[in-house]
Every structure is written in C-alpha cells, then in structure tokens.
Length: 301
Ligand code: PSU
Ligand code: MN
Image (cartoon, rainbow, N blue to C red; front, top):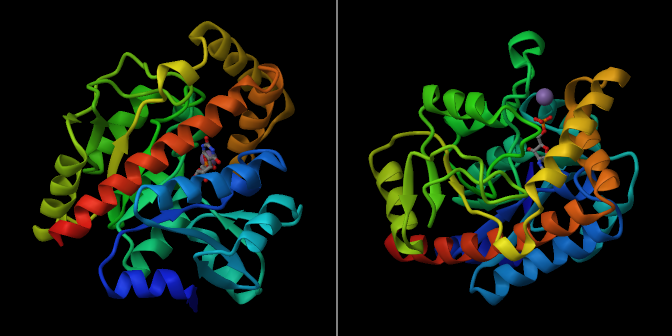
C-alpha cells in the first residue's frame, strides 16, 4: 500500500535522518510554479543539512514516500488533485486517486514508515468562531495521537490562536518554541502567546522526542520555529489582509476543507504576493531546523 523510494528506504533501514514533507502545501497552499520551485528548494535545504527529504503524496491510490521531482511537478500543476486528511485516506486508496496529504494525513503515512520528523509551513488549528462553526482542523487530533514531530512556523492568525493552544493542551501535545518563548504566528514571529517550553538547541529538541518515545507517551510534538525577522510581514499589513480574507470567506459561504486554501490564496492576492514570499522563506527555514533535529535524533535512537 505504501511505496517508499529506494534512497529513503535505505536511509530508514540504516537509521539515517529522514525528513517528511507534505503535499497539500504544494497543491493547495501556493500557486504554480512557485509551489514546485519551493518544494524542490525545501528538499535541497534538507539535503544540504545532512538529511534525506521524503515528500509524501498519493498517486493512483498508492501512498508515495519520497516523490520524484516529476511527481512534485505534477502535484503543483494538476487541478484535479484532492486535499486529504485522515477521513479521506481509505476512499482515495480505494478509488485509486491522486491526492495531496495535509499535515494530518502526512503524519499518518510518515509514522507508518517510521519517519519521526516532519517539516511544514503551518498547521491547521481551531478557526475563529469555532464555538459556532465547530471548524477545528483534523491536524490537531492527529497531533494528539500519532507519533511524529512536526516542525512549523506556528499557526496563522487566520485561526484562533489562544483556542488552538487550549485544544493542544487538552490533547496532551507539547507545544515548544525553537529558541523562543513565544508562539510564532506564521507570517510574523510574534503572537503574544507563550509556548509551553523553549528549546535551546537541536540536541535538546531531539532529547525531548527521545524521551517522549522511550516513555511511550504516544502522540505528536509541535516544534514552532519563528520566521526570521528579515522575511516577516508587517503585522498591520498582514492582519488587515487576514481580516479582509476572513470577511470574504464568510460572505461567500466558504466551508469545510475549502476554508484554509481560500484564505491563503486571498491573503496572497491582498498582499500583492508579499505573504507568499514570507511563506516560502519560513518553510525553507523550517526545513533547516527539521533536518538538524533529525540528525541529532538519529544519534540518540
Ligand atoms: N497552512 C499553510 N499552508 C498550507 C496548509 C496550512 O500555511 O498548505 C495546509 C496543510 O496541509 C494543513 C491544512 O494540514 O492546510 C489544514 O487544512 P484544514 O484547516 O482544512 O484542516
Ligand atoms: Mn476545517
């Protein structure tokens, strides 16, 4: 059911560092061709930092761990690719579809093949007004139960960040800041909200993962890594764009899994492409941190 490319398979057998990457960020998170260019640059950054990248997606109903550059190109281009989370997996397998994996679905497949570290841009979370809409990303449930460490740039302010933190606390997910005490807010390094603990080094991050696994404390770990200041958005500009995008989504009645892709696209439009540049830089920055943590973890295992 899962096709692992040879390089990734060998690395996993030998206990070498491997970093998982998702495909929804390619198909639904960024426009073509920058999505493809970014995905390949992220893989390159992981290699330069001594780990093997494994981009995960579903091709003709088969989960692929370690897509080729041609396959990544297809994920960037094809319009019919569906965004899939836990609930969709059995259906796209049965129907032999092409499907892009969200954070939740990527975590599932990564854990099934034994990849611990997964790098992305941002996770889904509790949406604003979730008390009425009940829109809570399945990514949070997955973090509660699946044994994968997710390196991200925090959660976007399109979400309700305080409620997202409450949810993760209830679910027993450690929320850690890489060299910060503050939860980063994706486009900016600052949310004004504290994380549970600050991690001071790659080694310390690896030790937290090690102790969670050794003690069989099942579930994910969230490592939040702030966007470097020089690539960050001006918080007034981004907050204005977010407010406007949220308003349009409500007016148009956007629901369910369309919400996040709609908001991301709108924000890129409203910021004249600036938010896309920030997004690209923060993912590459996360790739470096994820690769370094996976190297340290490989030494401990
Ligand atoms: N945030 C981003 N870019 C993305 C996503 C989130 O900045 O591409 C994607 C991820 O794949 C994430 C998914 O898992 O959106 C969450 O979707 P939802 O909110 O529908 O759960
Ligand atoms: Mn949702």
